[in-house]
Every structure is written in structure tokens, then in C-alpha cells.
Length: 442
Image 1 (cartoon, one colour):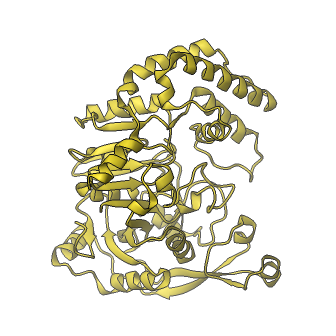
Image 2 (cartoon, one colour):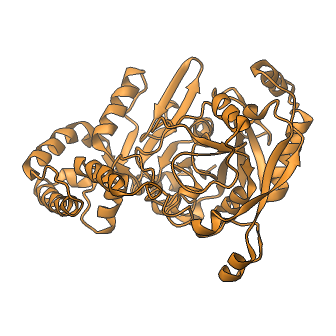
Image 3 (tube, rainbow, N blue to C red):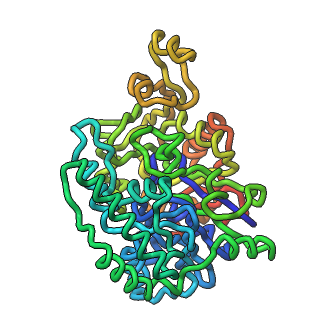
């Protein structure tokens, strides 16, 4: 490494959990630096499938610290469940560390999340997971949030609980609803849960700086994807935190100059959960084939993912915005037997929109407003597909270190268009179903 950021280049669901697990083999610590249990990561090892939402994917690697960083929001009851789940699978949890600066998602955050989404008209709904992520980040920005470290200070906690509930009650009333605003009840619940999660709470920023000073390897794991980023994404159909590589520093406490590699995960086609424009979406048999073959259901929401052709305007933008040095291409097997393949390399927009926004009619980078994205027409390049390959065919290609020529052509086209190198190729859920194209990853 020593410090590597791993992040999604699309709308999330790119397969970050698996790639994190693979890279964690050489990591001393894996750190989640943003988001909460609105993210879901799936790792398959042999016949065992692990589904995680808060604890970093690297937890299943022996001897690796799993750190929930400063920039995360944490539902303490969900964390408790996840620790118990890992324990039931005989995964040690003593190295799971929770930042004392991370903010706690409380029951009223979840209630407000549902109320706000329910108050929006059809077509305006964000598609939130209703896990309380947004309201918790709102409290953080309003400086009335409750941090994990506050559990250590009873009187401070009691006061903050009262202030937080009073604020939530006002918001609920404005939405025509009511919530339970009994501060002593919530205080007792937090005191009880602190006996479980308290031993995991640390000043993780100081801990990580110490690891850096000692030359240890650290993997910084992003949640969601570039285009769910609150600044760069398809606002307002975004998450409430920054998913960018730049925030890996702010959300962990590691200095930006200590990060020397950024790995971007690219699904071989494009998927999206929830609302918002999707230029390359396929509402036909090929789109349905991608859904079925790729088992495109959200790990957290279980909602069917919308599917479409690979959009390199998105990936090119993600590479540029995040200084991505390496790409991991996932789910390449899903495209087997589809010929031809279409790949979007740019967008075309109407002349009046181009003039209004001070742009040309052809866009090679992602637009800043969804109103413009909704009016964009994808410009496609036709690419030869490859023969239908089963699991044995892919494993044979891996053992012989011979990627089929048309797959290689697909990869080279991606590299040329986005100006970054594909160093890993994933063709299934299991750890072993991965090729190292660079010779020094696996």
C-alpha cells in the first residue's frame, strides 16, 4: 500500500466488498470513512456469504483492524447486531474499532427519515433507505449531533439527548407528525447499548496516525459511489456524505499526502437503485438479462437495481475527480454471450442547453445538474461481445493467465477512454473468481 483508497466509480453496488476483502489481505487496518448502514457489502468465501453494513469488509481477515472512522454515522443497535452476527460466524470482533468522533443515528432520526420521504410527491422522492442517515448528518452539520464518544460522559449525554429530541419534535410537528420525545427513555437505552459498543470506541484518528508512522498498510474503504456523493453526484438523488477519495482523509484522520493509491471499482455495466436520471438505462430484454444474471438486488434495500450499458462519461469523470490510479472491473461474466455490446463514451445535449450552460453540445464529463443530465442523449460505441462463458471457462482463463481477446479489447477500450489502468478483473462473487492483471495484487 501503505495507504490506499478504494471507492466506487458509479452509483454504488460495484462490488467494493469483494475487492476490499481481497486487498485487505495485505492491510493492517481497513477503515470505513463515510456513510452508515445505508451501504451494504457482500463477500463470498467458499460456501460462506458475509453481508455487512457498518463494519468494514476487512474484518474477516485475521489480524486486521476494522475501523469505523470519524466521517461515519452509526446506528448503535445495528452495530450491536452486526457484532453479534460476526460472532455467530466465529469472526473475532476485538479488532473492530469505532471512532469516538462518529455520530450516532438514533430512533428519531429513522422516524424523521421516513416522514420526510413520505411527505414528498411522486417523482420528487429521493429513494432514501430510511435508515436515518440524512437526519443524523443534518444534526452533525447543525452542531447538535451526539457522537460515540459522548457515551462516556453521562451528564453531557443527557443534555444532548434532550436537545436532539426537542429539535426532532419541532421537525416532526412541521411535517404534521409526532415522535416520542422522552429524553430519559432514550438516555437509558443509550446507556444500555454503550455497555456493548463502548469497549470498541477509540480515538481512531490517533490510532491510524500511529499506524502510518510505523509504516503499516491501511486500506480506506468508501461506501456508495462517486455519483451518490453529495457534491459530485446526481443531486438531490444522492447520499448525505462525501463518497470521494478526497474525503478519505477527512473521514479517517489520515493526512492526504499519506495516501499513495486510489483504486476505483467499475461494474462492467451500469446499475442504479432508486430515483434519478440514468442515460444508458435499458428497459428491454438485455436490461432484464443483466438483472437476472447479475442478481441485481440491493444488499441493504433488496430493491431491484436498474441496469444499463457501461457509461464511460461517469467513469472518466470519477477517475479525474478522485485521481484514480487503478481500476478493478467487476461482473465481467454477466456480459458473456451478449453481442454486440454498446458503450457510452460521451453525451449529446441540445444546442439551447449547451448555450445556457456555457458548454459544447458534446459532453465528455458528467454534468453538474440532473436537469441537464435528463436531456442528455448517450453517444454509443459498438463493441464486439465474447462467447458465452461459464464459471469453469473463467477459472480456466485465470489458471492459464489468458484473458479472452474480446474481453481484453473491452478492457483496453475502457483504459483508453478514461485514462486509467484496469489491474483487477472479477468474474464472480467468490474471492478466487478474480484475475490479477498487473501481477502484484493477488
